[in-house]
Image 1 (cartoon, rainbow, N blue to C red):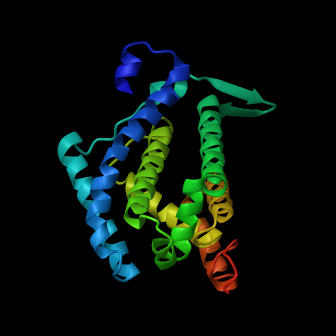
Image 2: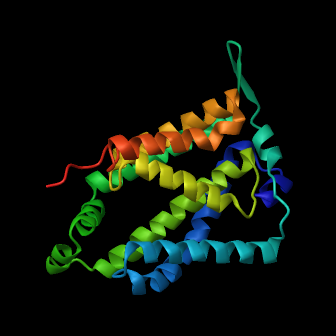
Length: 240
C-alpha cells in the first residue's frame, strides 16, 4: 500500500491494493491448516488454545520483523475526503469499507447457499461422516474453507488499517469481537453472523461517541444477555 501511495496511484484502486495484499496472505492458509489437521478430533477447547497460541507466535514474528511501532496509512484514509449529510460529517473511506463489507457478506451468502461448493461445505459441517460416505473429500474441503477464512480475515484487517493503524495486538482485539459476534448471532448461522456483526459494530460506535470508557463493556453486556436468554445465539438452529 505504501508503494501505491508513493507511486501516486489514483484513490479508487487503494481498496483493490489492500484486498490484493490480504488475498496474498491467504497463501499461508494451507500450511496452517495442515498443522491444525492433526487436532480436528481433539476437544474444541484444545483447538482453541492451540490456535490462540499460533496468534501469539505470529505476533512475536511480526514484532521481530516490523518492530513494535504502529504503522499508519492515514494518507489513504484522508485522500477520499468527507461527505456532509445535514450536520453530520462522514469520512468517505468509512463508506467504502461498509460497501466492501456488504459486498463480501452478499458473496459469501451466495457462495454458501447457491453453489455446489457451498452445499458441500454445509453438508460437511452438518455431518462429516455422512459427507465422507457420499464421496466428499473432506480434507480438501477443510483446506479450501480454512484458506477462504484466512483470506477473509486478512482482507478485513487490511481494509480497516487506513482508518486506524496496524499494531501487533490488533489481532487479539479482533478475535474478542469475533467471539462476541458468534455468541450473539449463533454458531453456524450466516444471518446470525451478519446480525451479530451489526450489533457489535453499532454498540461500539454508540459507546465511542457517548462514553468511550464503556466501549468493550457494552459489548460484553449484550453477550451476557444473549447467553442468559438465548444461550445458542439469536439465530441458532433449533435442536432436532
